[in-house]
Length: 255
Image (tube, one colour):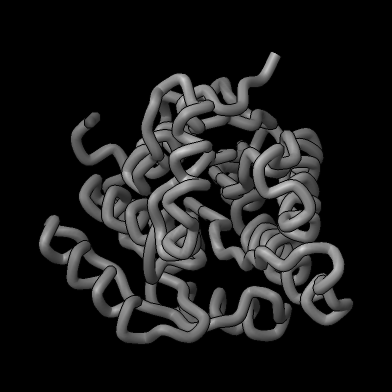
């Protein structure tokens, strides 16, 4: 921990009501940022995130928006800017997943997963970048997944849409880093199996198989992802941009 390294910064975390997003919100708030907690449906969970931030001495507010909608995303930014000013730190974390096999993957489901995961990242980055460029300072982290780097050998045909969308998030982040530098740094975090609501319905057998293939011999925690994300948002990562940083306990590695 590096003290209150985000003092005076305004942060937005999409999908901040639970899991990885919640952990990132709490850590940013703990370290001095004013945090906009985005949620799509679960207002109660978003309020719980705000309470956890307050317990750490942090401040912020909740903002409802479906990031798959440009209009809703833009209105959310308008509200944040009216309350606190431009967003300094953006974490595009909101995501959708389905574990349907290819035989049951419908066009509507495919479109929903891609619209939340990649269109949602695009909407947030595009809405944030102008003010960041004007200030010549901005830090963005997009949350992807190891499924965007290597298709699952265990779930096989059940993550086609999710894995495709997360590959797109990686490519989007890399291209934005080149396009927006040096004013804005853009990086990507690719978590492995993390204990969240999204993975809560996984069978014990499947979880054991994945842990058995993981050199760290455990699943990850939302706090593991939050630590890496906050590092990438910090001044300590000032020479890091356009990178995909994996936190998977060694399950997937990069060259």
